[in-house]
Image (tube, rainbow over all chains, first blue to last red; front, side, top):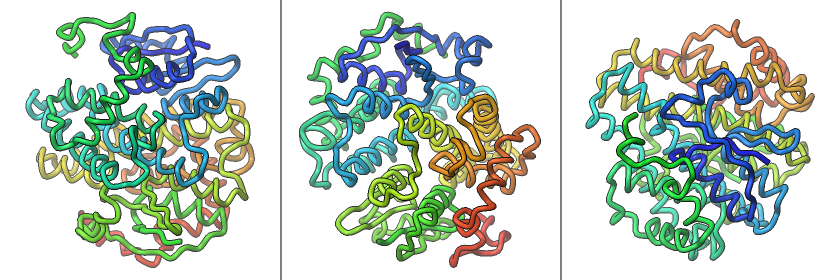
Length: 221
Length: 221
C-alpha cells in the first residue's frame, strides 16, 4: 500500500489518522503542494484531480479522502470508524461532510491562490474569507455536537471515528492557521483534546511528519 | 418520512433522484433558499447547518445529501446505489466526492452571495469564478470516466448509482446556469443523457418540482 501525502494538507491529515487508527503503515510519497508537485504531469497521470491524498493498494487507485477512509474501513474493519447502525453511520457521515463539503473546500490552497492572484485580495480579505466559512461550519458543528445525545467522549459515543478524523485537522487549521479562538466552541475543543490524547491522532499531526517544514517556510504560499 | 427540499438546490436534486430510484415518496417541505427560508429560526432549530436537503425519518434527523443517500441505501437496499465490493464502492464514492467537495461547495448560493456582497464582484467575475471551478472538476471527471475500465453505460457499470446521482445536477448547472459547453466532456455528456432517459432522473429535474418557478424569477438572487 502506498499513499501520496503532504504534511500540511488537512485531507491527507484525515487519512493519516485513519491509517494510524487501523495500525497500517503504507509507503509514503510526499507531494509538496506549495512547490506545485501536484501539477506535475507524472502525478496528474496517476491522479487527474491533482490533489492529495491518493492511495494505491494492489490494483486499486483511489482519490478523495473520505472515499479512501471508507475503503480502509471496509478492507481493515478493526477498529470500525463508522457505527454499525444505519442512523448512526449516517450521523457520523453527516458530521464529516460538514467539514469536507462546507468548510475545507472553501479554504484550501487552490482557492486561497485564486483569491490572491485572480481577484487580487490582500491577506486581510483572504483571512476574512477563510474565517467566515470556518466560523459558519464550526458554529453548526458545535450546535449539533452539544445537543445531539449520541455525542460522547468523541463525536459519536466513546470511540473515535470518521467524524473526529475530519474534525481534528479542521479545528487545527481554524485555531493555528486562521487564529480563530475556540471559546465559542467548547464541545469541539473538548473532543479535539480527547482525540489528541490518543497516539493515533498525536502521531498524525503535521509537525510529526517526515516532510514537515518550519512554519515560516510553509506559509509563504 | 419527510424531506426538506428546494427545486433549484443541486444537493436536494441528488436526494430526489435517490428517492425516485428507491421508489420512495416522502412528504416534501419546500424551503425557498432565494427567499431565505433556510435562515428562519424555526428551520435552524431543526437543521443548524441551514441548508437543504434535510431528512426526517422516524426519530432520525439527517443533513448532508451524501449522508442521506447512504442512509436511504442502507434502509432501502434495492436497487443498490453503491457496488458491493469495497474497491467499487470507493470508486463510486470518490467520483461523487469530486462533485460534492471540489465543485458544488464553491458555486452554491451562499458563496455567490459573498462574492457579490462582501467582495463586490460583478456578474462576469462571479461567472468566471464559477466556471473556473466547474471546468476543473468536469475535466477531472471526464479524464477519469473516459479511461477507467469500470465506466459503462453509467459512471460505474450499467446501473445508475451514487456517482450518477451527483453528476447529473452538476452537469445541468454547468450547462444551463453557467453556459459551459459540454463538447470537451463527451463521456459526461453521454452518461448524463443515459441518466435522463430513466424516469427516476427525468422526474427529479428542477422544472418538474411543485415549487419550481420560471427562470427569470429564480435567477434574481
